[in-house]
Image (cartoon, rainbow, N blue to C red):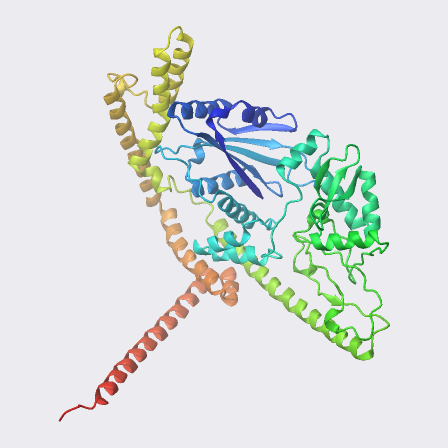
Length: 578
């Protein structure tokens, strides 16, 4: 999943962005999930009245695999918590557009006001890192492949600081070449420039990936580019090669990035080809070709070794490596790196290489087993949670579980953030000359908002909410108390339900057991929990009691030793004078 965002300047106006998001011609379908285009325009108007530099923040959520509507909204909620905006007050639009890779045809656009309900500027610190954190967390929660982002190391560190070590460990384990820099095949500017030349870089990249997999040699791969209408040229920088359009010789992207080959390696292969030395691509024994669009890492294309002299050291023997692991295919795809033998090698060299290959197989086998155990443990934990949820699915959902929804101040602030701008707008329009239609429209919008929030009550008939500031503030305070009282009552009614009481008691014990298993990695206890959670909970309590007793005994022993040492030191002091 890739999450991008941009802070939209107030002076730029909503026209261009709304035209793309609400009426983009290149989309198969556009669905407005929440709010409307009018709300985006209103955010720009209000930002202009306040004199704000930025009006809205535009997020784009682009998943690797198709998400359900609920999963999209769950991702929006995580963004809302991270950056501090109200998910119910944002504008959400879903786009459907087929991709060259054939994956994830849907993505969503999200507009959020750059002002929160309490009038503060929306948090914008370390935006890219925090967006990547939400992306990786979503991939973990939805069971998708972990994408390697530019800030992966920082994301893992932040998740651990937040106490989410399980997610951090999973991301780290599923990120190949974690500390190697990430490079994009092309930038967004290059993509737009290519589109103006009627070249789709996404489809071109997919075609180049397919060409790389189906080619048996480097020369065949380079020659195959002509069928795509592109070719390779030397770039301005050293060891740099670029892909250009044959029609107008326009730059399209970096060759090594589009082929997903390391820069130095691609330069060596291309320069060797210029000197008449071709390179054959060979798969390891038992390996079948894999679609490069499904690779999470880079698949290194290494040349077959030439004749090696007797004096060649074993450390310089070329390796045939299969470094990329197909995403989503499991630990069965892990392969060992093998050294190649030639007929010209001595018996000692061949024996040494055979030993190293055997050792590589052993290490790969251990790695497979370790990863399989980790995956099995994670799957069983998810199954444990799923079993619990199924057992208690009959219990009604907790109403107003978020304490903020039952906070009088927060409720008042939310109502004020909705009503005050509409009220202000009405007064602004009324002051203008020959502007009756706009004034009536503003008044209608204010009255509709009052009705929606249930301010059209008999209690307020004698009050002038529209024109009298004191009456307006009185109504805000009164309705905040009214809302909170009703929500507190519903929560109390939920808590007094007998099935809910049973659920809350069992949930507390389950959370304790789940957290303990997650923290300790106790596989045996997890197996018992899947069969009989009550028995597993009793086992955990016994273990905890033993651990507490041992800790207390050790502390007592350490204290006794400390006291004894102090006595000995005191007795060893010899007086200077007698």
